[in-house]
Length: 238
Length: 295
Image 1 (cartoon, rainbow over the protein chains, first blue to last red):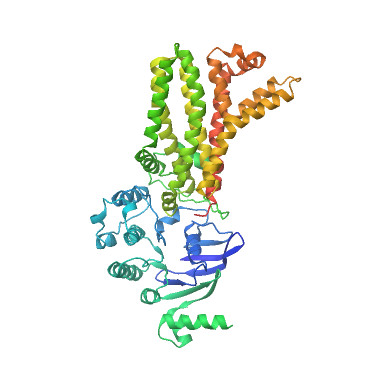
Image 2: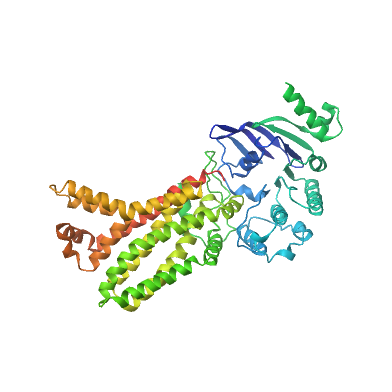
């Protein structure tokens, strides 16, 4: 469904992405893990066209997307740090995004908006919102247009336990519908619950990309965090 | 190709969104191409404009222009004299306010731009929306703040040419501001570049020109001067308005040549075309840069 082909990106001398070629299919939920600064966010931003790669290609359903913009209607994106116009009220923000996307979506999915009771703070301006509430807004916007691909960058960071659970339920529901979900997180227990596959990125390269079950079998561990820790240890030893 | 796309979006902002172009040109050079011909530019301009009007700087600017214009007209014994004073103020103030306000606003809208860039919107539409929002807001300020007093005191061709020059410079300097803010990532640097550009066009350029004139005083430089003046939007606006005021007789032989060329209908059309180029080229360049920019 979504594929990246030898994607490279450098920021000055630093190589953020160093030839990433992966194929991601509908129905998969993929954890992106790796140390800080390993290129996870840059990779996600390349898929979205927010960062323009130096070379390589990205395709969605076989169509190249680099240089295009219409394909973004199929993607819901929840950024790591949601930044919004300060003076805009929450309700206005939702109205604006809906208006801008008018004609590009077939269905509005306001499950999460209702679960988070957004109407209770829709008259507050974005500036006055706490970090967690802002994350809720980001999450609602990512799911709002019922997209085929969900890109969630550190979705649960900053959310309270209840909000976090609601979000996880929503992700699982969407996964069941056969959507492609990409999640980065440092909370491995969340990832273990949500995802089917794990992609380990280090220094802009994909170290491994396989179903979580396979990884567990390979390492002989029954928890994702232990399995990953073991792989990382092997890497540093090698 | 690229410019035509942006101009298509520009010319038809009110097209319905449902018309989609199925045939998409495939390119992989990192530039956005058109999948869908229409653009939700109108809707975005609306929000940009709303955001600008919410902070009261543009309203303050309108009131300032009103106060200055009324003051100048009331202080001078003849309206035409008032117009000359107003010209000098307009040539300094409108470019300065336009370029500084537009640059600051662009950097302050960075969150908004990031949000839009993740939506199914062409990147060029984002830049053009910012441009139109700023241009509309600042043009309205000039139209009210200077247009109203001019209409009351000197409702003639000279007054109109001054108003047109002020609006033209506003558009040109918003365009230059967009280029400055797209090209630099750092806010302080961007505002610095914007101020430097303003300084160059309003002071440095004239100083260089004077230096050139004195150094080559023995040569016939009139035609060259005409060319040099045309290259600076502020100088061009100044000369065109002064020619309307019938005081070009004071400008000597060069003035006579200017009058012969820029004083005619063709000359005014030429000046308008040059100003249009000054508005279009920086924006064209800004869109080019923004399409490749990492957000």
